[in-house]
Amino acid sequence: MYDGLEDEFGDIIGKARRGQELSAEELGRAVGLTAREWGRMEGYEWIPDPDLVGRIAEELGLDRKKLVGSAQKSFYPKYPMGKPLAQSRVQMMILGDSFLMNGYLVGCHTSGKALCIDPGFDGEKILSVAERANLQIEQVVLTHGHHDHIGALERVVRHTGARVYMNEEDLPLLGALSKVVDSTLSEGDIVGVGQLSFTVFATGGHTPGGLSLVGEEAAFVGDALFAGSLGGTRQKTAYQMQRDAVAEHILGLRDEMLIYPGHGPATTVGEERVHNPFFI
Image 1 (cartoon, rainbow, N blue to C red):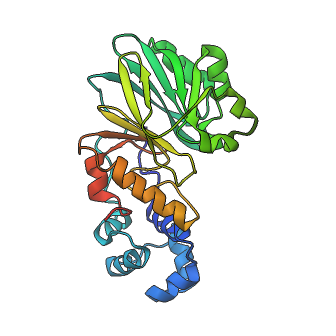
Image 2 (tube, rainbow, N blue to C red):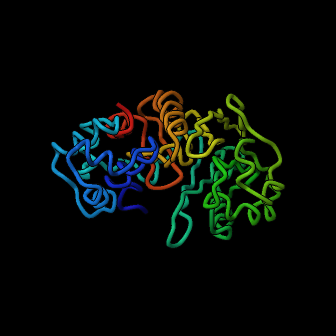
């Protein structure tokens, strides 16, 4: 179980800076800091006083109050590993060793059929969790094509015979593994397993073909959104695309909707509206 957020204050301002293609030098000048002092903030060595954090928020286009909250570590989600749901069984698996990510098994209560989302590492663990939960993996959906979300893909597919789906735009990221993908997904498509169904939304930016799956009770967002933060980008167009997509497709959902991200603790729509500095 997680005991902290995926991103700290330094991560947030670093992602906002890189996403807008800004240098530490120019931002430092704007708020009265040297590039070295800015680097100390991004390197977790120094958190400035709230007034300076507020000025930094304004320069980066972040929410002032929420960024101060991030600097003060005042937010942690209520359900970091999710909670029992009426319609589905969600197994949130923290996968990896020194580098961690979240993979998910989403099972239908009635049929026991399951969807595997982002088998990043630890194929044996994924299969073991499925066996213990009496879930049959029928499909795999990749929220995006980064290596830490596909590392156990071949092992899971070879053992289960599951069909694999992802957005076509991220196929080049898979290299030779692209041969494992059976079909592609686009916004508006429906992914069904047992009696469950999820709508596909394009939430690219972190990667060109990033997608989210939104059901009745929960959304699986990959690296489009973390508790209190976002997955990183390094281009202005991608950064704005990601913020716009998350604001429209995820934060437009009802407050109690669970959000299961690709890294760090689970959160809810309501908590992200209140605490995520990237959304004003």
